[in-house]
Image (cartoon, rainbow, N blue to C red; front, top):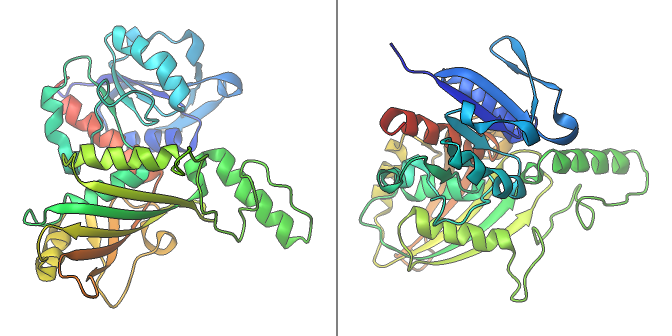
Length: 336
């Protein structure tokens, strides 16, 4: 008889939380009882699951001892306040908001570093990294083993859904205002987002880097187990609702065989390689899909040790919800 587990999804009414619930159903995750949790005004609403409408419970009063595994998709502050409480109750935790230090909750992408789970002790508190890091790690882990990365430069074009439902609503509002000839007053973003590209995501520190840029760099070093690799990340906000696009340039220690790169990416199960006569986009390819699309794979113009890539990935489904569910599948198969 297949074992089943009582599961909680915290932040179930958000875009990532809804995707989590949908994937648990699609992938026939062995759920005994699913508890959908939120706070504030969302408590008392409902979330569809397997033909039923589950009532959303209030996080403040939820008893974590009744569930075996909890997904935290309600922001870093919620994670910081409740995740350790859940762990103390014997509940495994998968955090999607990077609310805990890596030493406390290792970052894991199954395609890149699933082996670290063997060193994690019960009750298993894990982090599903940021969506750009998940997409990057999935592709980079699929490269031939002969490629030893020395330096990585990434420009991450992030969809407004990276800011949650508020980001989606703000882009829709701004677009409608401008198309109807009305004056625009930015709210969530510090300036016009519609029909524009913002060169900065989040507030920059005294050295000009945002917290997210530093986070992605640290995540890549951890996920690829290359703490010495030099990583440069620039995050920009683009007027796209869903799907992140990444321009990636890596410098290897020696010359790269581009044919080996094509073969390795083409055979990777979580990667969809688009040949040189075409290229992937988030709208036409990646959104709604469970793989990371990669195209424009090419060597440097005058450097045989340089490799350039273009990556397109669904930031909500693949980059957040699916990675977390795949982590949960590994946990229940080998550890819980």
